[in-house]
Image: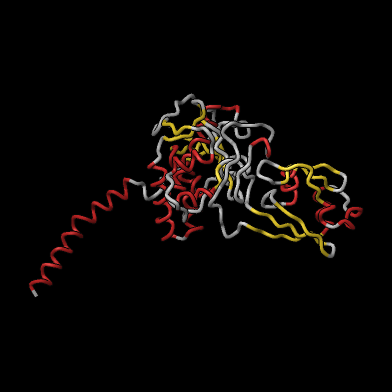
Length: 333
C-alpha cells in the first residue's frame, strides 16, 4: 500500500511540474500558427532582409487581398503546401531553406520580380510562385489531430533553420525543385533557356516514390488537337513514328521531338498533354496512345522524394541541399 502511495505521489509531481514545462516548450515552437492580417494593396516600402525582422506581403488569390506575414510563418505555409508532412525532418528543413531562399531572392529584386501583383512580394499560386496554405485549409486537409502534429513538425524544421538561405557567390540562388526526378536530375539548359552553374544534373539514388511510374491513355484525336498536328500519316508507323526523339538531355530524357513533321520541345509536349514528366514512352493501340512516364516534374534542382531518401539514409539538410545545388553555400541572413 505504501509503494502505491509513493507511485501516486511521484506521478502527481510530474503532472504538476513537468506538464507546464512541456506546454511552455511547445508554445515556444509556435504550435498554433498566428493569425495573419489582411492589408490593402500599397507600395512596397524599403525594408532590410534580416532574420526575425522581415515580413512577406502575400497576395491571396482566394480573397484578392494582400496579407502581411512574418517571414518564417510564410515559410511554414509554403513547406506545408509543397512537401508531404510525413517526410523526415531533415528533408523538411531542406525544403524550408529553399522556400526562404526563394522569397528572399524575390524581395531583394523588388518590383522587378513582383509586377503581376503590385504591392505584393509574392502570391500563393504555384503557377506563379510557391504554393502557400493557410491554417484553416491545413486543418481541413489533415484533420484537427494531424494538423497539430504536422504543423509542429514543420514549424520545428522552419525554426531550426531560421535565417538560413542558399547562396552562390554570395547571392541567393533560384532554388527550383520538383517532386520526383526518376533517378537523375536535369541541367537547367536542357529544360529552360539558360545554363545555371548551380543547377547541374546529379544522380539521385533514393528517388523511389510509389507513384514513380504513371500510365495515361488518350484517344489519338485528343492528342492531335492538343499538339496541333495531324498524326494520321504516321499512324501506320506505330508510336515510334509518332514521337521521334531528335536529341536527349544529359540524363537521357527526350529534349526535342519530331511529332509528325513538327519539331517540338519535350517540355512543351509534356505541358500540352498534361504528362507528369518528359521522361516518357508511348504505345499506340486501336486508336489510342498510352504514355508511360517516370518521375514527376521538370527534374531541375532538388528532387523532393530524393531528399526524403537522403534524409532517411542519415544526410542532414545542408548535405541534401549541397547534393542538389552544385557549388552553393549555406548562409545566414
